[in-house]
Length: 259
Image (cartoon, rainbow, N blue to C red; front, top):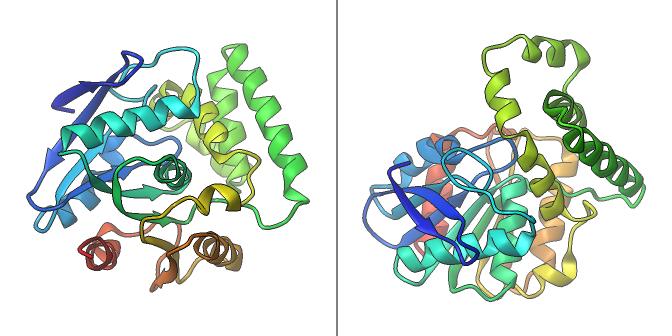
C-alpha cells in the first residue's frame, strides 16, 4: 500500500487509490487484505476513483487494542474523508457485513453494494456460531494461529484433506499472519443472522448480490438483506460463485454505483 491515513484511535490505515470519478471504497472479507480487491479496483478505475485498503490487523495497517467493530467503522470514516467526504461502499463476504454496519451508522455513504454476506437463515445455526466464536478465541488466546485458521476453513466448508494440503502450502504463513483478524470478522458478523434492525437504518440505495451458481442459501440471505433495507435490491451475477470473477462483477457494480 502506497499511502496511509490515521483513524480516530491513532491506528494507521494503509490504502491505495486509483482511477478518476465518483469515489468508491472496496472492503475485503476474512483472511484478505486490500490486495485481494485490487483486480476489482482495476476493473472499475476507468469510471471511478477507487480505494482499496488493508483492514486493521492486516497487511500494512496497524492494530490498536482493544478491538471493536466501531473502530473499523472509524477506519472507513477516515478513508471517506480522504477521498472527499462522501463515497460509495462495496463489501465482499464478511466485509459486506462491515459495510452494512458502517452505512447504518450514518457515515456519508452515497450507495452501498455487498456480495454474499454469509448470514445464516436458520436459528439452528446460532449454536454453531457461538461454538466457533468460543473456539476461535481460545485458539488465538493461546497463540495457536494455525489452529485458528483451520477453524475458519472448516467453518467455510473446506474438507479435511484440503485443509491439510493448505497447511503444507506456501500461502499458509500469510494466512497465519492475519489469523487474529478472524476474530474481527467474527465480531462484525454478530450472531450470524441477518441484522434486520441494523439494515433498516441503511438509507442509501443498497444492492445485494449473490452468484448465480452459488448454493440456494446464499440467495436466501441476500434476499433477506435486501428486504430489510428501505431501498434494497437483490440481484444475481450470472455463472458466479463466492469466488466471483472481477471482470464479471465489475460491470454489474459499475451500473449500480454510477447511480
